[in-house]
Length: 123
Image (cartoon, rainbow, N blue to C red; front, side, top):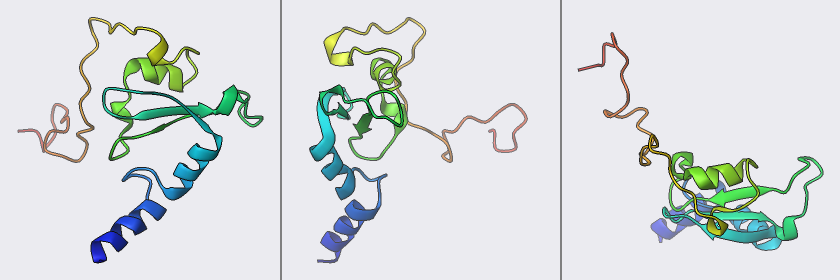
């Protein structure tokens, strides 16, 4: 009982554990699914490409698979999300550059975080 209450509470009020009820309702009401990436993140845009008057462009958003971590957005989807291209990743083939590294989670605040030269925390 307590666990289901806790899960419902998180779903109503916290966005970092996944989508909230409000986001789910707005996505259902005004969103149009565009695609899904290899991490399970789902991408949406305004229904029928409707332009938001406040932005001057269509709205685009992502619903993360699990914890909201923007570093899990692949480069091709990042390009689409930030209006650097109008073709979603599913409609073209993105070829990674030779210098692009595979995605890693954000290590800030952990033992794996980057420590600059001269840091007291550097081993």
